[in-house]
Length: 111
Length: 110
Image (cartoon, rainbow over all chains, first blue to last red; front, side, top):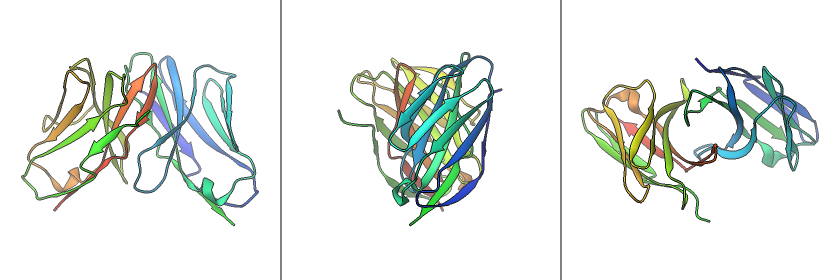
């Protein structure tokens, strides 16, 4: 059974204070690891897909990295508008299109 | 390109009733997945439809069902509603392992 654990559950940063979110996973054959951003009352917004260990992807202040057991979402010099819940999900080779999600990290960036 | 649309956005029902939710995927996407999101359980997979056939199913009771039409639009139905069915129901449209979510339908069961 695929499993995803995200830490910390909540993170409070000052504007400009860089940090990282962690996503640990177990899956029988990784097809893809996904990062989403979710604002209150809205659907998850796609950020990145990572497919193999060593892969990195960047978008504005966000950078996602992947190892064989975990993924990190690095946030550089965050702004208040980066405040959201960040969700990590995995898709296994035997899962079809099913994504298994972690509980998310609620990020708050104070001005 | 228009995103995933879901209707209605909000629903209030009472226990024992049934409800039908609708999802229109991104144009050209043939796979539609449904998820339930609650504060206690997070996002959980309900089922996936591809070319009008259910291709994958999560661990939900038979009260939860769905279907897909020839234009890829999908509906999910929940019969005999229970209080615990109150949740945000999300539809995801996928192509080449990328899944894009709609805004969700907020269902409240009283």
